[in-house]
Image 1 (cartoon, helix red, strand yellow):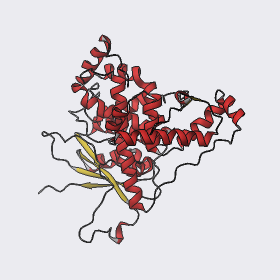
Image 2: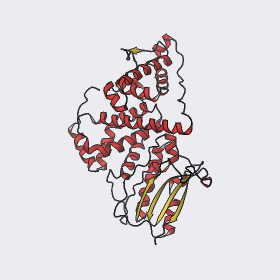
Image 3: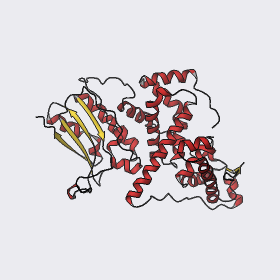
Amino acid sequence: MSEPPTPDGSESVLIGRVVDGDERAFRELYRLHATPLYRFALRLTGGREADAEDLVQETWSRAVRKLSGFEGRAALRSWLMAIATRAAAERYRAELREAGQAGGVKAAPPPHASAHTATSAASAARSITGRIDLERAFAALPVGYRSVLVLHDVEGFRHREIAELLGISIGTSKSQLARARKRLRDTLGDGYARTG
Amino acid sequence: MHEPDERVDGLESVFADRDVPETMEDAVVARLREEGSLIGKPAAGARGARRGAWIPRAAAAAALFVVGWGAGARFAPASAVAPDPSHVLLLWEGPDFDPGTGSAAVAAEYGTWAGEAARSAEWLTGNELSPRRVYVPGGEAPVFSGDATLGGYFLVTVGSDEEAWALAGDHPHVRRGGWIEVAPIVSR
């Protein structure tokens, strides 16, 4: 992802206090990143709020344990997102193992996006209905596709970074991104807005 | 070739209107305190109470299954200076166990209980038990285990059976439909 700003002085001070176990400092730090981190977690989990809450908790748990080693070479928010991504990937692998042991994989929720015509879909893209359709289609993506899509198209990570985070090859990251975009477009209809 | 230059428009709006649940901050703080990462205010009236290492949400193995974490136990080691525990509280879960809407809610509940319990107990710790079980010999669960799952346990140091029973009675695990087996630890 493009080089994010490094933590400003006040955030660095907060980080130091959190390393020392200061709860008040942690609450300040938490509030600085709560909303973007939660929404990032929602995207990774396909909008499942309980799972997103768990992911945020897990992310902070891991982050605070590692915070003394945070060197500030990246923005704290990017660092948190990387931790969240790894945690989500671990969780997904655990789900696969459990599903395998249980004899099946839980089916993804069916997409409920309406079959727009080319014209109506394009206009709906900027409407509430269009957004809801997009969220449903997004949530119905396989988790691997969704993760790459979020990291690349929403958060601006590069394929090299995504590959490292998810433990996949750069080629896999690229192909999953292409498939994710195609799956979304297929679900939403050909007329759905796209940009280059 | 692998990456068509066609970005789907509007992705940044996905879930962008969702607000952070108000309870999340306290739930995160509770977890970090239980993990020993944050230093909270000492509990009023504590008798040298030591916060246990219980990761609250981990108690609900059923919740772990529901939310799919299943990541196994995560806890800090018990203090080397901990006194001998007097009782063990075994947290059982059956088919009627209610993991609620998610483990964040369970985390807040169990964290609150652990905090309160640490005020009255001389010492307390607890751990999640991983859902991965192997039964020796044979590998399979014996018939008598039925549908019950041992989701976690607490070790406490209290002055009497009655105090241990009282602690267990207040645990949210009971309200969620689980049950707690309280057993004195035999010291020879």
